[in-house]
Image (cartoon, rainbow, N blue to C red):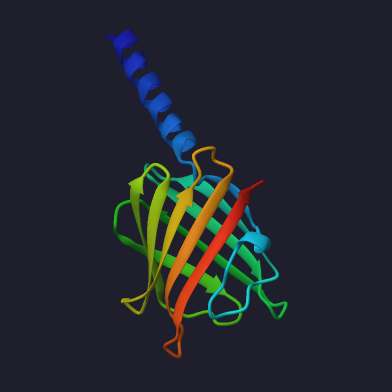
Length: 159
């Protein structure tokens, strides 16, 4: 019985580690400005994204961006791929309060993230990691505060 329990514990640990390792979004990503497009806003000067495994089925995300005017914007949150809302923290110019984020994993390479401000949908992101795991493409859609449509395509390279 003891050997069986040890085998079950080892298998559970292995599967947990494998699930984290298998998430292609996990890693450090740097924005490739030459391959990215921004509409209507001007592109930032730089952006680095760090995604780590979190919990049983989720990620912890930290983003540091220097916007077009040189101001620093930081974003941090942890969320599971379960369709539930999780707190979304942002500081810097344009930061809104009372933000949440919802994650849904479409397939191992693709994640949909929906942002909410005060309970209302504020925008979506579709994350797609290339089959070789070297490039992450994030398509952002929504509307600006003054009602203009947003369509940004961010190409990020694994570091």
